[in-house]
Image (tube, rainbow, N blue to C red; front, top):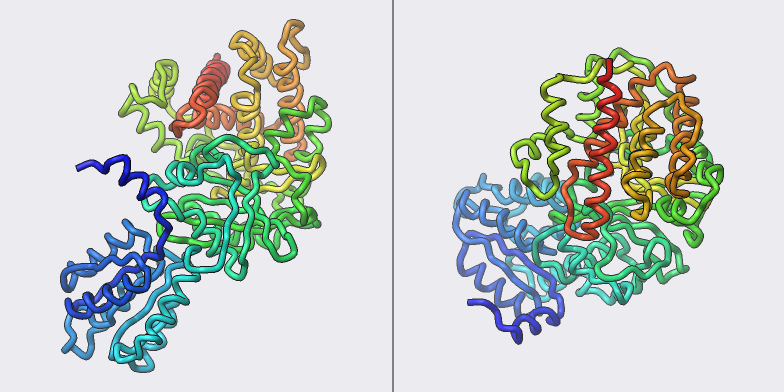
Length: 531
């Protein structure tokens, strides 16, 4: 039976509760713990069954309900078996899926070896004969570390933002009402008040702005000292990959005073978040995304200042290296964007919302012709997600976020991605398709320096910016010796954008971006395959 409007409204305004999962092979223990915890105002779920069935049900419930605390019996298989420590295997699996969940081993059996294993899982142990107040105190303390509702914490969001809709776009499953607050609480544990601000101080309409359906990037102002940080919220697997890539490739490698530090992360089941600080700009008051900077600044030389700053900083930290590469250019970009997987999905579902006949036709031509030529072998560490929403500037310097794809890759990859972003997304919708075709036709010829006489002013700005951006790229490699790599890089990046799945917000903008990307990819392919 469907919920009535009255019951739906009641559900929507009900206060969030800390969620507890109980995993014990004794029915009586499960009932006693559930009664005790529900009396304390917790939302309680209980895994059912025994042995492997109990273990699987615990994992299923954990993924479904996102518990803040999990209480696990040590002997899940057989209480009479002194060697049974099956609860430890479950603890390890739970910890791998969530760094922020509170884990409690509730057992009457303990020895020094087990105690060390429990601590290695980041869990705590409590004897089943412990006093009820000790049990309540431990649960409350761990719940307060992961759940905003169990702490004297207030998170103030912009009034016009619908944070539940934003969370649904990112994570797609319930419970969602308090999820974003929980992530903020896990990142800023000692705080009592936290203010969430738009990155650029602009109150956008509901829901909160989610970039490319992948992440929500916000400014967080902390009560103590009014310090500000930048926070990215995304799927936990993306946050985990970003932390690994940052640790391997970026940490302590960037010179100077103006660059990004990834301070900490939290993984809470399928959700996660990162905290960044921007060295050289502690206040964050004058920063804007490069997308906004591009929209308001008409002087191409000023637009290039932060890009040139980044280019010089990145070249100093990661000089380009010529190394034997057995992969084709396509295979190199496939590693960066997982391009084959995305394009295969379009081939299998050619009538999907993300595709169009021109894109399908281009894929068919690509399949018939075969692979791209061998790459030059010139590589460097690239950011890997160098679109304008991930770049922040004060007009002179550039700070980057989202290091998930950072690693060794094609030397021009970041330049190509920014070029495609400018032409397909930053170029205003007011620029007609005729002007877009005239613009891109002028850019296909890399040696051309003339400008079409009849060209929209915004298209003319894009033409000048892209040509200057290419010059920066070629300066970093000593000239146009590797021009073919740049051209094929543009093609594969445009193909990637053309095949991106829409996230059902700003659909007009997204479809225009994909249409332009498909057109640009087709024009590039015609040029590259011309005799």
